[in-house]
Image (cartoon, rainbow, N blue to C red; front, side):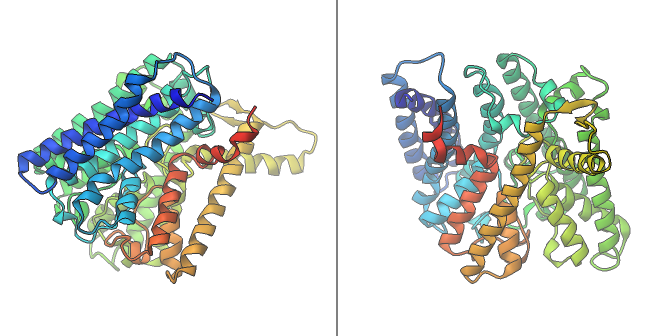
Length: 479
């Protein structure tokens, strides 16, 4: 491996991070708030660290498989480290572990927060906090689909294991074309949603920051009551629609809005994603109708927002779902596991893997009936190779194991079982809020420092699809 080449690629990421810090500094200057010095110092330090390898390390057109993995994983870790500097320098509720937790939560688009009073932050820090979502959201797609495949045609597990055949087909472009598709969709969603939120009553600042959290399926809000602060059906509807769209594969969105493929809706992945959410919304609405809300339209309003928010791993809230009946809570926990589609900014197991799991389960039952039969797993008529099926099943098992171990560790720190379980699930799935003391109307401030560190590792594991981070442990065995 060539450390100097790895450092150069990481430097590019840090320069991008520094650029957004500078924009946040300008926002802080505009509002004349207390975030100016922390943001400026962080910008300079991050920029100098990023520019150093760009000046002294020559560029290289090709890097190896192993180097590609290290670039991706190290970039995520370092960007989280430098991203915590504005918080730590500002102070307030941000101890070092709290600043680290908030930074990891932002860049991994998780949306869990340690802040008891979000509105106490200066505007510049609030903008930076939301910017980490936006950068982290587009970052994971660019790394998985653009930078990595261009490295000697390497197919990393970050993209290969999570994609259905349709998802792969939508990115059968050259890397330059893929980059254009991702940026076009991401920026398009960002611009359109910002304009709509602004037109329907949000300030421009809140429209931009909430759009960053929506398109990146992150969930950081500038208000203590999250989206519920606005109490606006129009705003909730706009955010609900864009959360749903942001949970779809960006390649599918591209062909959908450019009319390049009129049969995108026939995809079993898209259909499962759509109908599972619709059924979930109806069931939850029926369950909370008459218990938490007097009328069905009101129940449907809050059910739709909460279900889509959890199912897409966004994590915005308009109600305290911890107070809902157990049936509704269990459905939301299911969506915490399933989440949205591969090729989006969402985390979790993902719809693609769930569909492959059910199809492989059906195949196993058929093979018990017909032991000699050759029965491939198919998605939309295309066969899925056995290695991919095995990897999907292994991922799900490993996912549940990590969730259990983290939850067990939290209970050893005297965290109650519901809080420990849901905090573990919410972070490994990058959903954000859980239940119990970390519900949608609360925060993670009561979690012990060691617990926050473990949950931040959960976020990184979830964002890097588990295997991406763990591969560093076994680097010596690579050939």
